[in-house]
Image 1 (tube, rainbow, N blue to C red):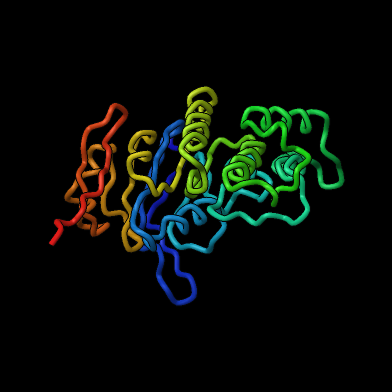
Image 2 (image 1 turned 120 degrees about the vertical axis):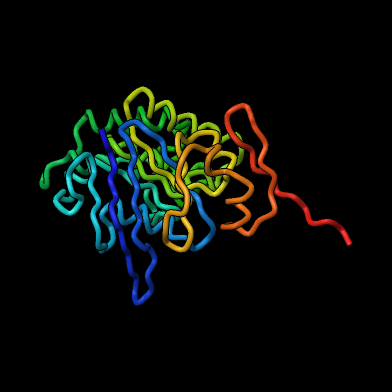
Length: 259
């Protein structure tokens, strides 16, 4: 089953075209990583797929056009972790993650015991159980990133959109978060679409890569098909060597010859 379908997607912000006719398909349970140089439109693509931007073209989530999904139904279908989420001042980690249960609470109701238990389970799973009473803004970058992921997972989505999910994490917590996402994908059939800056990590975890440049898809396929020295040199303007690793291609920068 196709979980995410994007056809001829255009996004213009102000008077600037950001996305230009993007086509993209993600199968249910698949992990697809969107890569590309700065300014390629990666974050805009995620926001458009999540129904957060005006677009032209077609975006469907689990077979339903995104514009037909009411806000509550959309929140139960897709969860997004933005690159720099707004951090509410004075809010505890527990209360922040509890916001992810909003789609399950009636308009005039309160969170149930089940909602509270779901949050406690997520905090424990993401190694945040000792931080529930801490104010979110006092956490380190890595701890905060895990809290953002916990809130998204509290929505119990079928689709997870991650914008640079490991950008603030040290290598240990990068691995923990990515392994957790991969486990959820396998065990719960979660579909993952993520923008990723580290090409070697993207190639190690994603089933497929989509290379975006100047708002358009310029390559798509398996990590070995996309992470080639020719494509990376052309679209990143980088001198790299691509070598085979245990879990996928490894992209290694090459220094210029000393003069």
